[in-house]
Image (cartoon, rainbow, N blue to C red; front, side, top):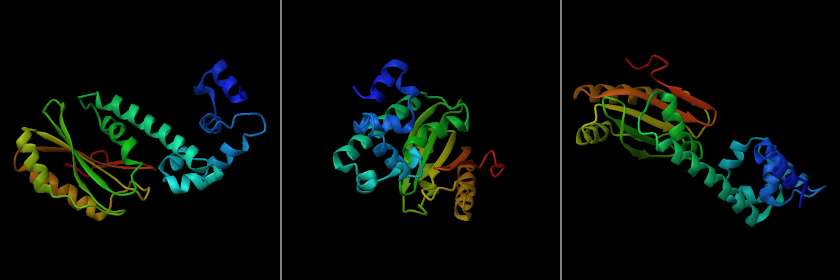
Length: 216
């Protein structure tokens, strides 16, 4: 049994470093072989988030781990995302923008293109439906505000929250984001539907139009 495996059994896997966790997946935890997971992590600036976003081609070349072990890492990362996604989706009522960020962050930060989603809520903030409204490129996605309002009316939703990602890393809104937000807010208000917030999620953080005072 490797030193890392013995440590995890004695103290728990939550006490392992990032490199030690990778060594368990790579089966490189024997004495003198810690350089492989360390080199792998170093290839991504020591950041697990960067490693998690890597495609299979880049991952298999990093640290020379090969295809089989690269797939093993991607499977572990995907399992983690699914567990987190399941946990947050079980919460059917939104109490703050932080709830929405936790709900969408696992999937949003892993994407290399923009997506825009809408949460349709009741007046008591219960989730009726979450729906992807558009999928775009690296820097933009086109959202039709009429489709959002139409779906809200079909669901008898009185409140909506818009969510999209910035694959570039920065969560700061673009001029296009600001125009879209006001357009959706005005269109929804015509039918007494309130846009509670527009959230931008990126690897570097998140941005709330409501908290920034850009929604009235």
